[in-house]
Amino acid sequence: MTSEPGARDGLFCSIVLPCYNEAGNLPGLLAGFAAGIAPDMELVLVDNASSDGTADLLRREAPRFPFARVVTLQVNRGYGAGILAGLSAARGAVAGWAHGDLQYAPADILAAAESLRPFSGKKVFLKGLRANRGAADVFFTSGMALFASLALGLPLRDINAQPTFFSRELFEGWAEPPADFSLDLFAYADALRRGYRLLRRPVRLAPRPHGSSSWNRGLADRLRLSWRMTGAVLGTRARLRAGRAGA
Image 1 (tube, helix red, strand yellow):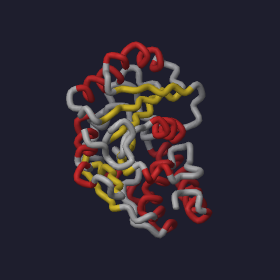
Image 2: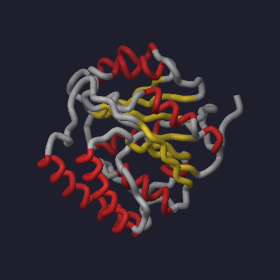
Image 3: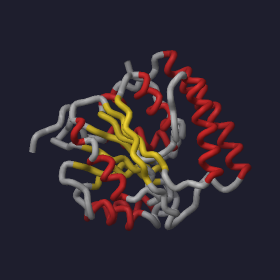
């Protein structure tokens, strides 16, 4: 096997999946990736201090899947902190993340990763583009993206779409990345600021087989997220201006 530039152990891609109380989804998740993952890819599953038995299930089931590695966190310090812990363990020349709730099909995540093979050694940033959302969700996220674009001076769209993949040099240059949900925005904005080639890939969202969304449950949740997103945008702008992202 020819190693990709920046790869460790000859791996092409590391896929980080933060898992918080995803015990019900993990069997289907592992089976889905087992059906199509390439030998030079790895799946880094991060148990973000779950309370539903996720850690026990991963300890029991992950050894059956040679491509799977497990990172266990004792304290949940945020969505972003879980992803960053996974990235720290990643060995691929390309790395990135997606959600572990099966709303994004493993086959679609793998196809997105595979699409980056022709860009070996190049600075690329791939992000999904959600294709089957309701009008209210599209309006809400478009408004947030417009505000972020104006505040940061960057052309942003569907900021929180998954999956997210990039050449590992991007995250190796981060000094103080955010540990919360704003990591999606931070990574996207930093990649554009540093001149990475942006690739968007349409993906379809499926209903969660188990569990429920922690925010998308009505107008009140959207308003709360809008307030949090405002803070995230301003925090990202401060990080970029202070040079706490990559050089």
